[in-house]
Each structure stands twice: as C-alpha cells, then as structure tokens.
Image (cartoon, rainbow, N blue to C red; front, side):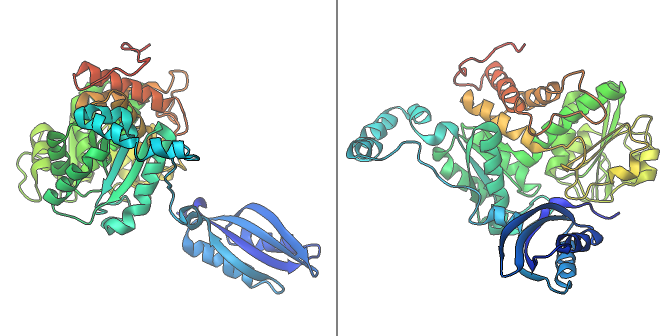
Length: 478
C-alpha cells in the first residue's frame, strides 16, 4: 500500500518562472501528477518578468520528494533556486535553548544572581540540602538520559545520533508538563557505567527519565537507580508505553463490553515495552496474557533466548502453557498488543481472534498490521501513529507523571503511581465521547497533563514516597 503524504516529509521549493497566466497551474499539475499535496504557495517577489514563489508540498518519503522536484525541474522555463526539507529546518541549530528567569541589568542584579550574594544561598543549601529543591532548578528539572542503543524505529544508532530524539523529548516535557528537561546522551554501554553516570549527575536534577536504552540492560539500570537514588527514575520506553496502552485498553474493553478478567491478550515483543505492557496487564487483572518474541510464545518450559525478564514472564503469564508462533497463539485471543515490528500479523490472524477483536499495532513508523487491512473486522484499532485514530503516544503519560512526582517531591516513581496515571488518562475520555475511534484523549488535550499529575501526586502521598503535598491537590479526586 502506498504511503500517504505526511508533514514529516514536507519540502519547500523556491521556484522561478515567467510571470504569465497558466504557469501556477502547470507547476501544480506536475506536483499533483506525482502525488504531492500543495500546502501553500507564497510569493517572494516579481522581477524582470519572472515570478519567484515558495511551494510547500507534503510528500510521502524522501524518494517521493526527489521525484516531485525532478518533475518540476523538467518543465521548460522553470528554475528551482532551492529545496528545503522542513523537518531538517525545525532541527537546525537544535530545538532547545537555555533562558535565564532573572534579568541581569544592573550591578545589583549581578550581586544577587551571582557573586557575592549567591554564596549565602550556597551555604544555606550546605546546611540543609533539602533547600536545593526550593532554591535551584532541581525542583523542576529532569535529565533525559540515553545511550542511543534502542532508538524507536532506528535501533542502535549511538548517543550522538540519538541527540535529536532526546531534544524532542525535552521539548515535550516543557510543552505538555511545564517541566524543564535536558538531554544527556552518554557514550557508555556497560550497565555499571550508565548507572554511575546517572548517580553522578543526580544532584543537579529532580528526576531522571531513561530513554531508548536496549533491553535487558534497561531493566537492570532502572532497578539499580531506583535503589540508589532518592529522586524519581523512570524508563519511559517501558512504563510510558505501558501506561498509555493500559489507558487505551481500559476504554477499548468498555467499548466492546468485555471485562479484564475474561479476556486473553497476546503481546508481540518482549523488549522493554513488551515486558512492561505484560506486567501492567497482569497487574490489571487480565485473565490470560501470552507474550511472544521472535522465537514464539514464552512459557515455563522454554529455555532458548531467555533472560531474567523473560523468565519472569514465563512464571507469571501464559497460564495454559501455549506454545508455537504468534500465529498459533493469537487464535481466539480478544486483544493483540504489538510493540515489535511491521508485518508480524496479517488479516487472517485478526480473523482468527475472538469476537470484537481489539488490535493495538504500535510499532513505529510501520505498525504490525495496517489498519486498512483489518478495519472491517477489528472492533477497535490503535497504533503509535498520529495519522490514524487512537494514537498510543507516550506524551500522554511522561510529562504528567514527572509533573506529579516533582510536585509531590517524590522519592521514587512506584507501581501505584504508574497505575494511577493510566486510569487518569483513560478517565480523560468522557463516557459520551468514548467510541471505537476515541479510546484515548488527544495528545493536545491540555487537561490530560494536570489530571495525570494530580493522580500521580495523590498516589505518591498514599504510598508514602511524597515529601510534600502540592498546593491545591485534592486528596480525593472528583
């Protein structure tokens, strides 16, 4: 199936041509014939009998964009002065900057912001280290730490190439949670080295968001940091994905009229996200969960390709000990959760599922099965993409989770706080809005972050990890 045009592949061509009737139509026709979508035509200037205009066009891939450029270039009388990839322009010079909150305009300002006045603040923190949460950026700053070993859709690209992703993550923290975040890409792969790095930078930050670190190393890194640090630590690829998945499933089950204890869920993928999703499904009380990796179903009798995380899955999932490939175990399942790779299942697999099947095909950028293939047989479909309904997007979770943890000055992010976030996201979809195409709120629903933050802060207080009660927090939600 041909990919549809997308903003991520939009280009802007600056085109010169004779200032005469019919030229705009000729160029537009050439673009349309190649499947491009014109978003805007902007006049730059008219000079010497020629028009200079910028054409902004949505394409479906880099190759598609190149084909459109060549089609326009082939028109006699047309000159292309420049072609800009708009996604690269967004990243030009990076996506972040540091801005001072306090103006420094006078000697008095300087004496308070820096020397000599800053010394009094330093001594106050020396005498009471807790004061750092009031007197420094630590109260509202999170480190986004990655080694670039498992970047979504790209794999192991290393820390330098991963930096644009971490910058984007930091931007989302600020936009959707009001949390200051800074990307820290570390050139280390050994678990001890990554743990030590995080421990050494911890005095600067109020929390640590681990990102795009490969399994099974990510499990050990997170576990050790949660034991050694007294600030919130979360590996978002595990828990952020699992939180939004569960939120969507809560509402999907409501849509099809099924209870968690009565359904069987098949999970494709036993990496960081797959393991976390399976654990959350078990904790939620799903009747049966079966996890498949590239070798097939994980069960108690399996010995090949196992690690500590998969051994936990073998002990706590697949109660009936089903074996075989995902095509074998998906038959009769109520729910499919995909966090693996494109093409893992097909139409026949969904047809073999139970009545009113729920399909969460969350691999990015291409899902495990395209929604178009199963739209007439699946009751509810969700993906990880923004161009389909029901996007299972971590941005619904991590800004609010850390916002609530920071507001409560939590010592950790625990399972109860994670569960609270999932239910808060699910409840952000009002009953009258809930449908097969609306099981999670829009990522631009600005009520979600505060809802999640409040739920997380309440859970932090209830479980004894909160060091303060945020101002205005309702201890019992409405």
